[in-house]
Amino acid sequence: MVNLKAKPYYLADEDIKWVEETIANMTDEEKVGQLFFQLTAGMDEGYLKNLVEKYHLGGCRYNNMPAAAVKMQNATLQKYSKVPLFIACNTETGGNGACSDGTYIGSGIKIGATGKVEYARALGKYSNEEAVAIGCNMAFAPVCDIHYNWENTEVVSRAFGNDHERVAEMSRAYLEGAHEAGVACAAKHFPGNGQDFRDAHIANNLNSFGEERWMQTYGHVYKTLIDSDLDAVMGGHIMMREYMREVCPDIKDEELLPATLCPEIMTGLLRDKLGFNGMVVTDASHMVAMTDRMTRREMLPASINAGCDMFLFFNDPDEDFETMLDAYKTGKISEERMTEALTRILGLKARMGLNKKAREELSGNSDLQAAIGKDEYKAAEAAISRDAITLVKYKDEGVLPISPDKYKRIMIVYVKGAAGPMDALVKMAMGAQGAKKNPAEDLRDRLIEKGFDAFLYESPLDKIKQRIAAGEKPNLNLYFAGKNAISDFVAGQDLVITLCDVANGRPAFGLSKGGGEIPWYVFELPVVAISVNAPTMLADIPQVRTYINAYDSKPSTMSALVDKLIAGKSAFVGVDPIDSFCGLWDAKI
Image 1 (cartoon, one colour):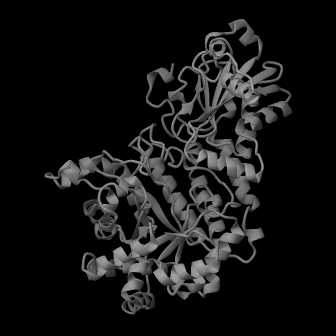
Image 2 (image 1 turned 180 degrees about the vertical axis):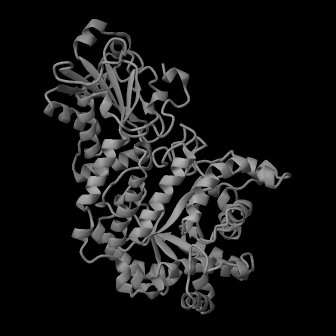
């Protein structure tokens, strides 16, 4: 059973008594409710009251809103909850993961590029100070995955890098910062993402390491955190074929399960081999890597029996609650396993002091204006931007620095990723809020301020769309067959900046013939390729001679980027935290 005097709890006898007496006095419904984290879907007090009173929730997660709204919601949730709630946030990159007006500090990959552990600690501390101010008490962070596969889009910008030592050091620093802020951490995604090119939200996800190599890499990361009093682990929906073949030699492929449903991983590996005594919560239960192995009615109790203590998100609240309740009443979830899970859940709440705080104390800081967006937070973000931007490839010595005398006319080619199903909705929502500059427009304006004649490239496809919208019927053959003279193209600008803004996946180019999106002209004109998002663009434009990873397009980043372009090669101090050449020899030449 659970040792509440050991790490990460360190409970005194009176707190252990509270845990035991609370469990003993719970109804079956109250016990089952503690197993669930739910995603709230509204601000109405009646809705929130019903949510916690009907389902007796153990924890809540919410959709991002301004700080004042989150604080109000969290106060309402705690007000009506019989047992204090975990209220979690995704402070992976800053307080912006707790509330929409929170401070962005830096992504994992960006901080990894600085090589400075103190920035990871600042991320943990500053982001979670803002979270505490609005009534949050748990971070679904740090992301301690290791980015081995350049085609993995799920954690490409979230992991600290591809070196397990760096990931361990920075994950521990984040944990220490979060603890200083007063927040518990659920490190993710156990047993480790970053190898499969697929996304667990929409397909299976695999970790291919056997036990020995896993213990040297991912195991080292988690053991480092466990030794540093890690509070909780978020189980990922990740299968371990090689590991399972070692521990269960007769297992068949069709019997393999994701970690969140697999006792050999969540209990045998995490509990028994790594010695983790803290709480475990599943990753979101709607992800296909979890739902495609069995029926949902089987899946819910299977996750608890595998060793997960809490289940992340209802599908249908009534249906899921009744499924778990029935599993407990019929013995599919044993009394012993239920008590163990509840002991970890309530033990962590006691370690956080939630059982001793008045409800008003759980709702955050009364002065949000002073708590959100402090100058020291913004200064940290600016410093990370200056230290992170990485000159990955520089084959054309002399391209940098740039100056108006050297390259007066600069054409900026804006490259996006393929449109996803949510893009149209996001565009409509952003339109309702007022148009904002895209990164290419921002870069253009900053260069103009420095004396350059910078302009945006307009693709042939965009011109076709404009003519069609105007009622014309353009001859498409002219666009596909007609080409301009190279000398005319070269005469139009002195330098080209290919600006890639691709969050996940691959860049989407326009015409493959005659268009300027693809930098086919790297030996005709100086070309500087810059990624302001995913750092893996060299896989698709390996021919570029100068390539920079900026990691994001925040104002502080764009300001630092322009300064470094003007200052030259020596201004770039970031170190590639992954293999940005994507393992491709031709990207290096």
